[in-house]
Length: 225
Image 1 (cartoon, rainbow, N blue to C red):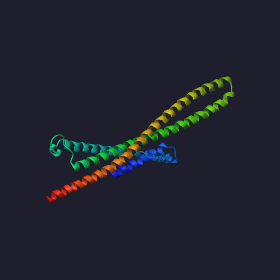
Image 2: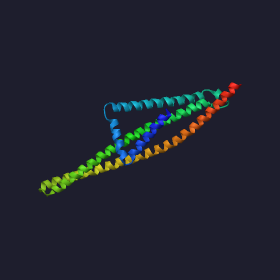
Image 3: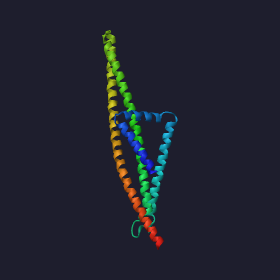
Image 4: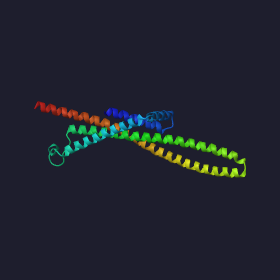
């Protein structure tokens, strides 16, 4: 389960990185996401997968809360005095659930970032095409100025209106570009967090091995006694 989540997280980070930088990989990533979003069943499948991951995340969080509540409600396991402490087995389970919950949360967040990046890229392409079309139309109108005075005034009004539209479109392109930069910063932050999460996973594996050795030694002592 954890290995699968790590593979999903690494794949999502790679797709997000491909969308962030203008390279041939971005076109492939956009085409791949377009293929995933096409068809009637694609949105249903995506929502189903997201729902399953959310349900697993909720179940994992509930298990963590149950372990914490079990430790807090059993004063005999605390070793006397104040608050109770987790047993070695509960510590291993709690660490595993915590790692799984973190991986699923990061996976859902990266999926949302990829979806937003894909949408921004498509909107930017559409806005650039609109700007090019308006520019061509503007040039055609400017070349037709040699007509009659009335037609010239009409063309000038149309040119002014088109210039206003171009300004609005440029502002929209600027806003979308800023949103894309914000999404890029978020994706880079997620990549850094995923790297720290890999280090944390290695540390948890070492702690898990150490706890297993302790449990094994305890079992040997109990069996010998």
